[in-house]
Length: 536
Image 1: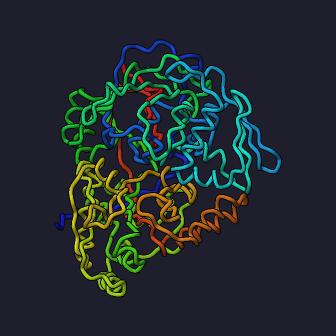
Image 2 (image 1 turned 30 degrees about the vertical axis):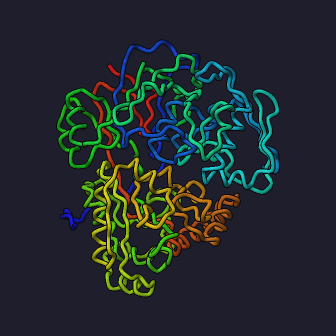
Image 3 (image 1 turned 45 degrees about the horizontal axis):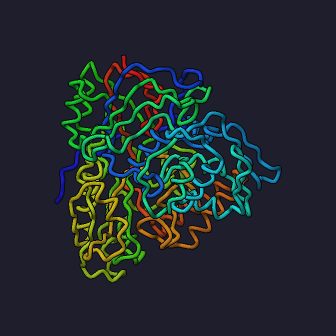
């Protein structure tokens, strides 16, 4: 099971200000001008296998959402929330009541106007599933529709990040749907992808495992401001974007070089040198801050229902081995990053950090003995269609086996992982113990938005960690308005997370996207979006 690992070297420290890219000029905001008949063919990290961005927290569903839907607020290149569908808003002097007015001329793809009732219904459905939405809902006394364009949120207790919550770009990103669709129970997946965003989507054209097709929405009204991060004017200059399923990285790289596709979100590190030698191909850091490998742990099943078994993982896993095994070039690695809120960001903290460097197998085995581990199989789901997930899974599983775990590493595609990870049965009955996901800085940037840090137990996300102290600290952080006090609380959150281990940050790195040289307007915004993009 051991895979050979290349040398250990390199350090990449990245500035968070670049996380969402530089501001880029965009066309003025009236209904979109007629775009030339251009088709952009893109290969993203995963295939599209689901379309409800509330029901599923998978990144590929979020990517789909940014094509089809729009947001009330959006995150700019500095990480600040800016009005998107909202024209104006007011906040009461005590910060407890917010009023929002929507922009004129917003239409859903079915031709119906966007109303305040649609926004409120969308917020309420989203708040049932997303950790940020739940936090906002818990602090909300009422949410009311005033008229067709205006709605209010009145808080019952302090919540310092209302606008940041409404701009939620990841996890279950907050998108606005028609009220009739947003009224669907949050535990039932929608089948009608009607939004008001810059592209339309027809399920009849969608072939999972082949391609999904998005067409320019001629009725979309971009904002007048230049595009800036995920905010500003979403001016579409393409007629069609085809999201092509091409899981084999060598096939995708060859197709890019031949001009059969135009963009690869995350080519595997081993093909980057070949792509860089091709004069018709360019590369860019689409996510400058980078990604983390998150090892998600099922807290409800042995052996990891015992915290000592979880702690044993810290002394078995070497982040450097994980990054090397993934083939990440030294220049794109951030060795020894134990920060739950990413290294190279203003919220980087190493409080309470331990392990994750040179393995201490004796200590890992001792913790396993204390936990009463009896050699039972540990089911570590492996998404083999994702090269980075696959490589990191194999390296971690090998390290765990050397530490004394009895490993079972079933192969499956990522779509199957996203389904099986919701099962609560014992691993031998179809459940699971571990899986790896690769998260970007928007997924884990602070104690509120970090979807896998939340530890409410059965009501939380898959893995179901439960720790009242960690939850209280997280809540204190987003209720506190004083920056210095918030930093103190953040260090306490980080330290407690190392005690509880809802997941393990198993390595931080950066990857490069690749695209044809005739594609213009791509910006490093972390999430793949294609407004402002054109082909020569």
